[in-house]
Image 1: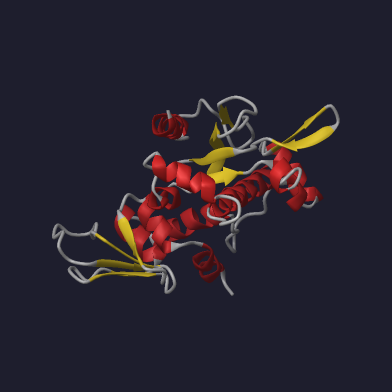
Image 2 (image 1 turned 180 degrees about the vertical axis):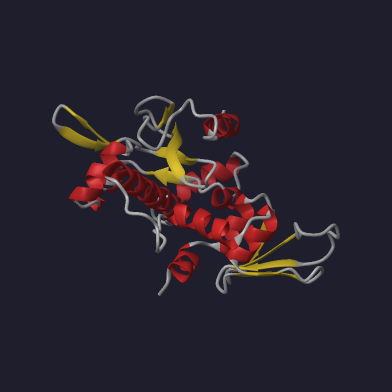
Length: 256
């Protein structure tokens, strides 16, 4: 299977559309969403996104296609640019790229792992045995499930309740080294522990669409009220192209 198909399988077109600023409403549990088409002025026609078929279609202007077509049309970019953007997002190498040096390879692995961590914490929030209490708490604070999906909000549970070193114990040795580099786990006095414990998680995204770090709010009594990822080779807090202040303001305003 070529890179184009692999990348397409790894992304969720509905997530891409919503992150682009298009409001979508899910229809049942079939993976279908409807919203207002961003490609023409008529706001009364149906814009349909199918995350199972990985297609979008507007019954008004006739716009139709897959996730690549959507990005090309929405951002007015070429196919190669849409492909590169999605490849970076999912951590997939494209055929024909020049060989990577050690530092470039390490950065790529960090991006891949951060994406996996974001997905992991997000799925944990929607786990009926682990995250339902936190999900109810968010909804009571006007953070809907739709918003949680759009912003990839997650939950880092209490390790003692769900198994010590909740994240750490699920990683192999090479993954543990990457997790240390990006600050998801830490060492202290010879011991290893999860950095984010019993916290609501909001990912920090680079302008390229890659996840580079996390902001978090404590839901218990352990550690500071707000905790942000440490700086790493993929995350610099003072970089203007990282939407750090926007995400931090979001979590502060929503939970104060």
